[in-house]
Image 1 (cartoon, rainbow over the protein chains, first blue to last red):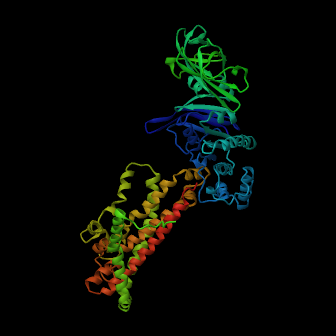
Image 2: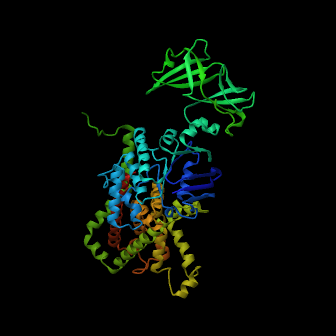
Image 3: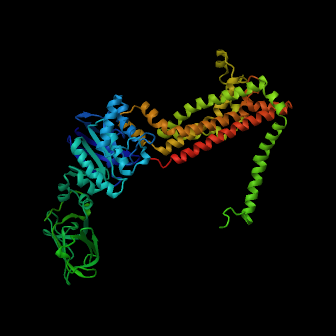
Length: 354
Length: 275
């Protein structure tokens, strides 16, 4: 099912939580709405489902306006963050609910429930009460329940937010696989960029009620449209710099940028993996901390010239790490940076890549 | 190993003793005296309680209780849904108004009913034309009982509704359930325990109501006399055995209700931590 959202606006009291959001989603896509908590992503999702009424704007499903339709008439599957399972029903009754309210014959209900229990890895748990299941199992029941009436659109609101990290990883992979098999159009809301980039075909970045950027994970990582996106995505350093020609100088370190006015103060955004550190006694930085995180090493340093911290990540066996230890001086090279003029805040991108 | 149950000492002993005396004087002595007195004159009590007048009084009390359970059960669930789930102008006013019967003395309630339904009351012309007598007739007893029992079911159900939230109802809507299906299949099973507790409290209050039914009903034997006003009348007429017997009957009913309540409250506690 294709979705079109036009100029959606929603306020709660005096706070405008969704501010003129428009986008389009093609049939069969798996799209992530990514952004900081409280940015309005869930409200957008709830307006598509009909759980929340928009103040203005339109929602189109399959080329048809649905703003006047109640949630029950939109045939949209919805998965809630905290599962929202019917606590007094068994797992099987939960999954069958969407079928039984439509008076689907008993035998057909049972068949569909059995299939879904199987697909979701819940075989043998049909008679359990939701309270007897683990978080991951409950979320799979919620997913099965949403899928049972074969919705053409599946909406998931922070679906893995309430389960622990390991289960989350597993559910993620599993959602991607499920999407590829069932081929329902799916939208999920998350504040976890790793989650969004790992499974979505396309990512929509929403902050403070506005759509900041949309694109494939690679587009967003390589070509952030706004300073907000550049800062939000990936592990980044934000350093104070001054533009001089096509260079931006951060004390004695410099990087190539373009399109910025000469002499302007700028925020220089540098990803932790677009940096090189090596030991050099006359270098501009001092190493403060070295942490090993799995297969990577994170090095934190202090730039004396500009009084700012900077950090970088290297593969564990990288030759760049040779001789690097806490307290030593280092030289720094920026392979790739972006810069935004300071006064302009999160306005349109002005500085380009090297 | 030393005994865990030590005798309370010092200040603890004083508090313990105080509580014991307090409960004995206020609770155990009156109830015990009632039991002893009734047991001592069992034959007398039995004959005086098997009169038509006693039966009628009990029957009216039970009828008032049943009418209150049904009427305020339906109203309580609907009212709780409105107050908890809807947002509208004047909601907090309505919310507060529900508790008025708890705060108001039943005697005042009775007077209010007289002013509306009595001989020179507001609705008297209409009622007269229809040939209905309310005051000093059984309908007044039902009305007064309905009024004093109004908050109980509503409050208990509202509490449960507040606690379970509305995401299950939202889930039901996205799955295509109508409002009616959502209520009967999702909301109702979730509030059932609150309903049981509300009903228990309603029953206890309905059986025990005295002031309001006395003022509007006038305690006319076999017509507007309830179990409580029967006791009052029996004492006035020095039929002590009848009074004590009926009192013990009501006390037993109240204790039975308390037991049901206790059981259901603990059922709710064990049910929590659910989903």
